[in-house]
Image (cartoon, rainbow over all chains, first blue to last red; front, side):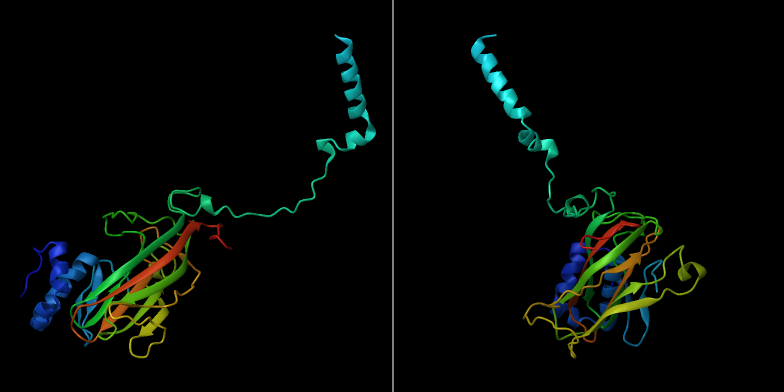
Length: 61
Length: 217
């Protein structure tokens, strides 16, 4: 499991903007990166197959 | 009093006591000028103005950074219901019975017109402590914007680095706001290719107390 929780917001943004690095990641690590970003930005993340990977607390549906 | 002055005063008295002169006195003139109601925008156009700290125009938005494929959904709001307060948000929302918001326009920009797929912008119809949401009924979402990168339902400016709606969407919808900070917008975007698609949504709205109307109404 990739752990991005210790990244600062700036470091996390830098990782996400590094397209070649992101595209070379295993899908699981890429999901973990997206989940960490969603946690910090109160964004819900749902995979194309309908699997919900992250939902912020008290998120209105 | 010298004679010359008394003569002058006597002459002036004759002038001002003459009937036609009295008709021309300022108090007798009827001003026939059109009265035009002027909406004093300067008093309400900014937060912290005449109607209270929350009244006036606001801008807000959300960013979706698609590193993985799938949907990202956020609920942008001028209120922060997480307990933290950013410089652009209030920790709590005003009483929904007393306040309303009118959305003027919303627009979306993307940095990658190839790898993003579709998106919607909607309004949360139910709110906490008022209406169906308080009874445990799921909040209804009324989608007000739908767009598709491939179909191009809305005109999007072509750009190598950024695309955006060429035309902000006039909405002018009154939205009740919640005492607990229920976000009133719902922004969803989808990317079908893992990459670094970033979509930005921005909106302009006006907030005011019940009984007040935005400038122009």
